[in-house]
Amino acid sequence: MTKSHLALRGLLVLLAGLPLASRAGGPLIVVEDRGGTSALPYYEALNLQPRADVPARPPIPTPQVPATPADEAAMLPVRSAKLTPGTVARRVIEAPGLRPFVVIGDDDASRAWLQRRSVALRERGAVGLVVNVETAQGLARLRALVPGVPLAPVAGDDLADRLGLRHYPALITATGIEQ
Image (cartoon, rainbow, N blue to C red; front, top):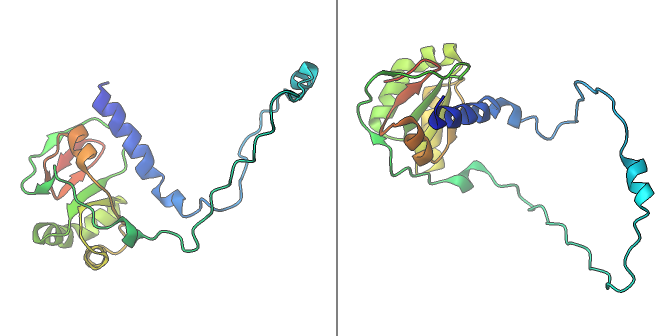
């Protein structure tokens, strides 16, 4: 397996976790605990004492949480210099387990493509990466075209390099790239 396939798998793992991001603040649930032995007795046996000749360090300041959490609008505009609207040649890839995702922009070609494929994308459980979008209104217009398909603004230059992709709109699945 090549480095690009491994990198693609890593990206896919991140994409698969998008639905979990909304639950990130929830309580921790332990799925399995295999037990084990505490390492505390080993540390206690060392009898570590603070050094008397070293002055006490001031406590490390805790970063303050912003009063208003960053929202999606703060991520905009998103521009991907290596990706432009255009024709994408169909080709085969091998990425078993990859969740289908689309690469689009806020442009006429992407909007028309989304309208034609809206139902199929929703049925496949696809997610969308919007790689070129200037405003929150542009992102909202795209989302209105594909209700039920999550779209996120993402810089796509690294993805373009890894997939050898130069144009969008494109659908990437476990078995191929197509338009």
